[in-house]
Length: 274
Image 1 (cartoon, rainbow, N blue to C red):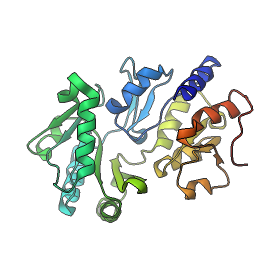
Image 2 (image 1 turned 90 degrees about the vertical axis):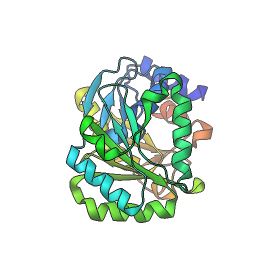
Image 3 (image 1 turned 60 degrees about the horizontal axis):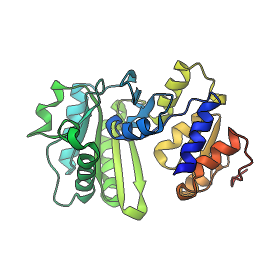
């Protein structure tokens, strides 16, 4: 929405660093970063990769080692999941997959969307391979994902956690109204919070001077790191109920602009919350 863009630009004009922290892979988030002209590196892959949208300069990258990646794929496939891996973070990035189960409509929709998004670069961005296990050693791997219905992914997340332990970070993004859950498996200790902490350190910004805005459970570490945390009005009630978080209006009501206006531009926007 235009209001959000205008608020972001006004904050940047005041000298504020503004970025997007997302569970999406860099290549999928990059078009938004380029369009907004953000003045800070994007925090992508749930904090595992910090990279500038325009120049492709890599600021920081956490990687999953080859043996761990093979174990993730083995465990996930043993449960019946369809794995897709994000590789080559020093470049624009590549998504590799080898199968899509007939019942995995969410993954089919994502792959179709990604091909449309990347246009002429679609083949480089999303690549079908005969067998993922044969590709792992050829690439730097930053992120492995599984997706599907909420019930199936809830059970699968428990299985992955039991099998993989603390060798990885497992995060879920849940959309109950769409019956869709995305499970992201990342290097140990990776989160949007760790990515935000790295950006603050690199930029010599104290955490008390950081504001974070989020709407899902993979935002929790980021919200807890920031000195000022704002939850979107459309977020899960369990996040809205957290007393230490402010609540803005929903995505459809330009909640980002309202939060920036209240806390950065001091425009007198009226937020819900304390």
